Amino acid sequence: MSRTRSASQWEFLRARIAPDGYLGLHLTIGALALAGALFLFGQIAEGVMNADRITILDLQVSQWFHARATPPLTQFMLLVTRLHSTAGILALCLLLGWRWVRTRSWDWLVTLVLTVPVGMLLNLFLKNLFQRARPSFQDPLLTLTSYSFPSGHTAAATLFYGVLAAYLVCRVKSWPWRAFVVCLAVALVALVGLSRIYLGAHYLSDVLAAVAASSGWLVFSLTAVGTWRRRRIMQRAGD
Image 1: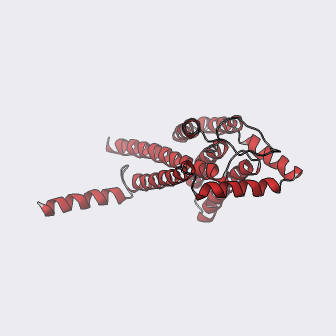
Image 2 (image 1 turned 45 degrees about the horizontal axis):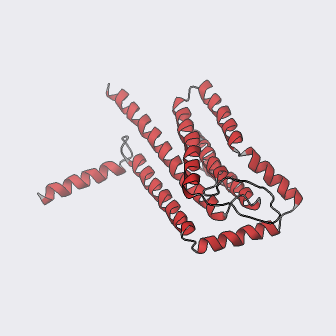
Image 3 (image 1 turned 90 degrees about the vertical axis):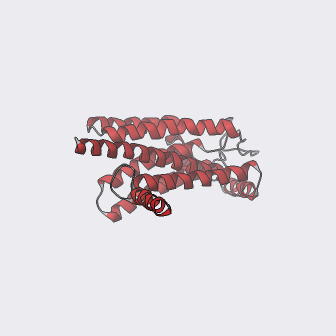
């Protein structure tokens, strides 16, 4: 009985790490990445809600940037944050989606729709769930009345550039170019997050939580659509 159980467990484990099949290594890596992202978000959220040390760091970082604001840098950060507003990200999604319609890249179009608009709605749900007030300054660079945690701009940038980077990585065969694409996407997300902290719209933990939660949804979307695509391919091969 024990040998049979061990053999079954080993077969199950082998199936989860097998590179072939739609329920193999692809799904396992996605599940682990999703669990890691959700754990990180949970840790940040717990620290914010319990007013742990991260909230002290939040105040220190916000005050440091606010004290060093300059008119040229403020104008640049305002441009960055406007380009990555809800309207800006949706416009970018429409442009990218139109390209995928023209090239009949239906799987990527489904991924884009599932990832970005739905992910932005989930971030809005989290904002209303936690209801954290935004940073407050006597001479604010930007005044907003909505909630702060997690950052919507950072979430939207993470989702959009994450999908775009995943698409380009699949299209590019050279590993140096793949690394460049990933690094560029990370840099753009970091710039958006930095713009929100600099302008006093968000705390550092708002940005980090947005990256964690949105990365989790990004991984879920990529894994779900990828698993669905692999299943279709296997079904066609079996016909």
